[in-house]
Each structure stands twice: as C-alpha cells, then as structure tokens.
Image 1 (cartoon, rainbow, N blue to C red):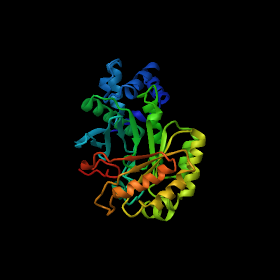
Image 2 (cartoon, one colour; image 1 turned 180 degrees about the vertical axis):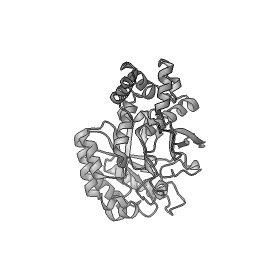
Image 3 (cartoon, rainbow, N blue to C red; image 1 turned 60 degrees about the vertical axis):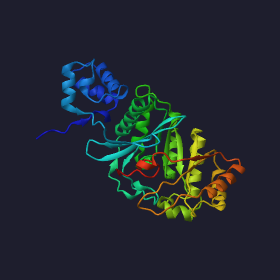
Image 4 (spheres, rainbow, N blue to C red; image 1 turned 30 degrees about the vertical axis):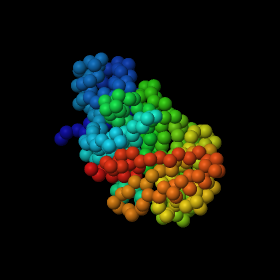
Amino acid sequence: MELTKRAIRNLSLEALKQEMVQHGEPAFRAKQVYEWIWKKSVRSFEAMANIPKTTREWLETEFDLQCVTTAEMQVSTDRTIKSSFALHDAHLIEGVLIPTRERMTACVSSQVGCSLTCSFCATGYMDRKRNLEAFEIYDQVVLIRDQAQEKYGIPLTNIVYMGMGEPLLNYANVLQSIEMITSPEGLGMASRRITVSTAGIAKMIKKLGDDQVKFNLALSLHAANDEKRHRIMPINESNTLEALSEALRYFYEKTENDITLEYIMFNKFNDSVEDAKELYEFARQLPCKINIIEYNPIKQADFVNAEADALAKFTAFLESKKMIVNVRRSRGKDIDAACGQLAGKK
C-alpha cells in the first residue's frame, strides 16, 4: 500500500528544520528548501539546484508540493485573462488577471465554491467543496504574476481576494497566504497592494482588527437597507448593517487601513436617489470610499444593470455629499471573468 505524501508547504520553517535534522541533514538545509519553495516558487524538488541529489530524492519520497496548475486560459477582448486552475485533488477554481493603464491586478479565489448564496453571484449557486490551503492561494498569485510578465511584460501590482469563496470563512489560510505573499522570505509584495473582500461577517472583521492586519478591506454591500440586503444576501440576516457598521469602525480604529464599500447597481432595485441617501447614511459613519460596480449578468438570476441616467443621479448625489466615489466598469465580461461571474464555466 502506497503511503500518502505530506504537503511540504503546510510545514513552518521550524517544522521543516525538525524534519531535516531527524533525517540527518544540517539544520541550514531547511532554510534553503524554504527559500526555494516560497521565494523562488519552484514547482519541483528537482529544481532546487543547491540541494544535494540524495536530499532531493528523499524530499520527493516523503513530500509533495501539491502545485496548482493552469487547466485552461481565456483572453478577453479587453486583455483580461481568466484561468481555470486545477488543484491536486482535481477540483477546479478560477482566477483573473485584470490589466488596466494604472495597474496589473490578480483576482484570486479562497474557496472551492462558496457557502454563501448571494443571489446575483454565479459562485453563490455552487456548493462549497472545501477551503483552499494557503499555498493554493499563493500559487494563484504566482501563476497570474507570470501571466502578466509573459503576456504583457508588466509586473503584478495588486492582488484582490474577490474570486470564488468568502475569504473570512477561510480566515487562517487567507492570512497565511498573505504572509507568504508579503514576507521578505516569500514574494515580498506590499500589504497595501492587497485587498480582501468580504460579504460581511462582523465578528471576523473585528478579528482582522484585533490581528492588526496591514492589508485593505472591502465590504460587498450592494444595499444600505436591511430589508433589501436580506433579499439578495442572506448573510445579512445574521450580520445586519448595524453590526457591520460597528465592526468596520472597530477595524479602522485598530488598523487605520483603507475601507472600500462595493455597491453593484441593479435596475429598479437599489439604484434610486433614495437608495443613494441610504448608502450615504451608512458610509458617512466610516472613513471609506465607494466603488459603484457594473452588474454582470448570470444565467441563474434575472437582475439587470442600472441605466446610465440612474447611475448618473446616484453618483451625483453621493458626490454632492463629498463622498469619494469610483464607477468601476466591468472587465472580461465576454469570457465570464467579471465580478460575480466566476463559476467554473467555459
């Protein structure tokens, strides 16, 4: 019977050192291997050039890197690239490279599927199969970073945890992935270039504050009225707007990190000036900016994007109240790579 290999990237540096010493290797060898894994992002033990051949063979026997691989890649007319990534257990997830004039952004997933059932999001119609390991999130960043360089010759500038899944329901692995992405022992990216987006889990937002994280936070709000938000985001029943407002204020007091309110505008649902007034009342309690997001249709729902006139009046009201408002146009819609469309669909 074949023994199952262990995932080496689930070991801390100290745990890896203990493994090395027990095998009769010098302790410094662990740091060498660790650097190959996290700083140089190697995809095989054979590639670890300064590690003795006998040690590499032993590593190959005992451990597995469980690398994420690119199963399929689609390029949009606007240069957005959507990738289907295969995990070691044959599950598929999706990630997106979003190129704009100012930045090159990787949008990564944190779960296989999602346990939340937001009615406007394709991922919300999938079952949650499992949480992603920290190294599986890290691998998405590496693969998308390489795409940016190979396709466009531009380095990755930003990372958003806005793909499949709810990041705060995979809290430990998400934070560990960010540690390896930002650490000098890892990819060395700046924390301020990373944004984690949540559908709104108040106690976990407070935990981010207690842990004094360095990255930015985005709340998928989409309605500033409890009754309306209940209808499209069932999580609001246990995480009301009042609870979320309190949690976001707590998060900012602890971290002083940027907060973004994400607001998808649906035609004749949340796009009136009255809706804008409710959004203002919620937002004015926080140091935040508001991103108005174009709705991207999915076959499971019959929502329609707000009309241009409604959008103009909505944003004009908020700007008259001195709110910082950005209108985000969708990228990659033609390949189902836009916000809310990720569902493993070709």
